[in-house]
Length: 246
Image (tube, rainbow, N blue to C red; front, side):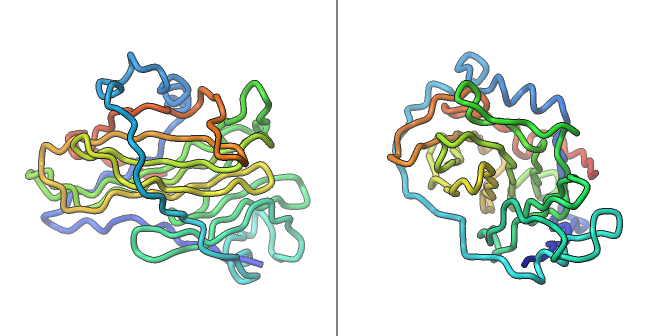
């Protein structure tokens, strides 16, 4: 019932520097500490409501699942379990997002960046004490114009495992201290995937931060420590422009 999205990364031209980051295990630890206001130089920015953009954009198809398969995982979409399947909006269009499990119990994910795997061989389990945990390290991509450090685009994806308490996860970006819309996705059978972005051009020297909300079915905040609930600074185009893929 679904499809693989081939790795979508900005194309680097002579005047464009693309920093594509596949976030490592160390980032998981950093994320678990990001809720600490003392860790963020912009944590004191007041949280003001903005519009909500629901990124969930319909169901996936059998062809989407088939395209996400590889010879080492499975060869027949009818022989895998779809643990999570939804189309989601991205900066330019939409794509299927999938969590699949094969007959051996192996898990494979696909989103706008392509295939991904869980960060740990033993899948994390969410609970009342830890209602949000990371399924993978996630991915992000900064595209910055040459030495001027003008941001062309920033795209990010987050893979989470959540407890039954969690109905929705929201994320928004702060650009020069101004809050953008909340990107929102609904939990599905204990999984959450969220695609979010900042569109350029944004001038050199622009500051960026991100912030999350985890909500129950009544729209009430679910206490958790995995995601930063106050604005947390992002490096943006000042990061130096190194690229690491895979």
